[in-house]
Amino acid sequence: MTLQGWVPEIGEFLTLAEVIDLAFDYRGNTTVVRVDGTEIEGYVFNRNRDAPEPFIQIFDVAGNGPIRIPCSEIRNIRFTGRDMAAGNSWQAWLERREREKAEKAGPA
Amino acid sequence: MSVPLSQMWTVAAYVLKQKLSGRKRYPLVLMLEPLFRCNLTCAGCGKIQYPAQILKKHLTLEQCLKAVDECGAPVVSIPGGEPLMYPQIGELVDALVKRRKYVYLCTNALLLKEKLEQGVLRPSRYVSLSIHMDGLREDHDEAVCRDGVYDRAVEAIKEALRRGFRVTTNTTLFDGASPLRMRAFFDEMMGLGVEGMMLSPGYSYSKAPDQEHFLRRGRTHDLFSKMLSNARKHWKFNQSPLFLQFLMGKRDYECTPWGNPTFNLFGWQRPCYLLQEGFAESFQELMESTRWERYGRKSGNEKCQDCMVHCGYEATAVDDTFSSWKGFRDTLVASITGRL
View 1 (cartoon, rainbow over the protein chains, first blue to last red):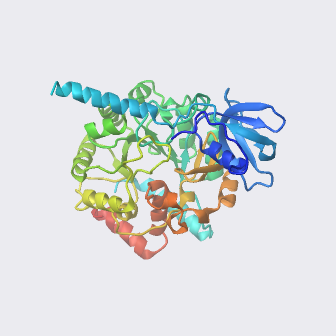
View 2 (tube, chains in turn green, yellow):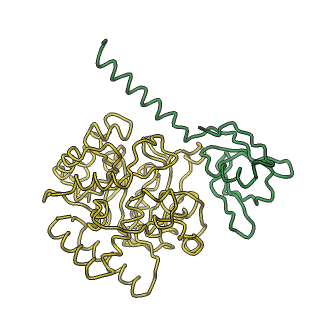
View 3 (cartoon, rainbow over the protein chains, first blue to last red):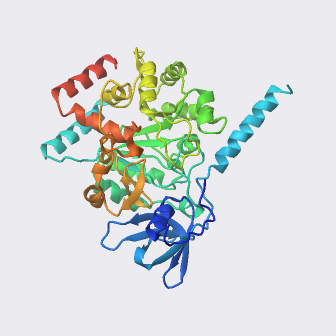
């Protein structure tokens, strides 16, 4: 299961803190929407809830960073980038190997 | 055991100094990851799944050396990613040798022959080329998801040995590994002339593509007992014999995640090389602000229950060697007799 493409709806059943945790765990770029409406796309590599002012840190899509954003300035985070941990390349390798094995074995 | 005497002495002196100074938590091996980029995508690896802008980045030489100086560990392991893809790998290793750090350069060896021919690396008693080898040809190529890698690694090992390098192997084991085939693999590696071998069970990275083949604790004991009981005399292991006994189920240890702190592009990784639960900006912050009581088997943390990986437990084993006469004696006996 991947969160790729997910646009969280923060409200009664989902808190911003939970979305931040999911974004931190996500191995792809996300788009952080600030309270003032501005957006920044990048990889969330750190979050610290225990700091006096909780924050996240990201590298933007150009690789600039680390950029620190206080959690109090975040409205939402959209999971816009490709999930690099979705296992597609490994799946493709498995399928290719199975195909090659079948070809070597010849017709049944 | 095959750890050279000078290295053993350095580590022993360092650990005793920590103990005499009453330091409860101390680093033993710095895991320095200069980049996440790799030229393989192994099924059990959870280290390289990042967006392109992260994979393109690497630490500067200055960042690497600052981390080494901050940490102060006598041994520096350079994994990754593939460290031979780091543009300043030669300068980094040279600078570490100047600091008299024992370096384990953990590589899949795909680029090794080329780098050796270019003179990027120089042989030194401080430097060990630690070649990733997960088993015999078929097993290794399957683990790294590419055919022909085993043969290239063997060719590179021969070349490195010919040029006078210290060469060790590092092997990660997963469920389904055959003890008999592994014993044949140990024979084959020693036959090549490597200095020693390092073994560890794999960790079930939540981001690794293959989630089905990680070893549980009981299976780890079973596999390592079958593999290492009646160890052949010519097998040399470049690691603590007490750690190997722990893997065989003969000892019970608790994790010391601070023993192998990890520094990478994101900073000092909390709490360990395997779990990624946040980053500290300095080594001191890592040591002082990480809630260590949340990790390790006793903590009840689900993510730690089946982990028996070297980066959590080998430092514990080394500490045990210097904590009691029994630990010291057991290490000495196993090192001399080769019996585990």
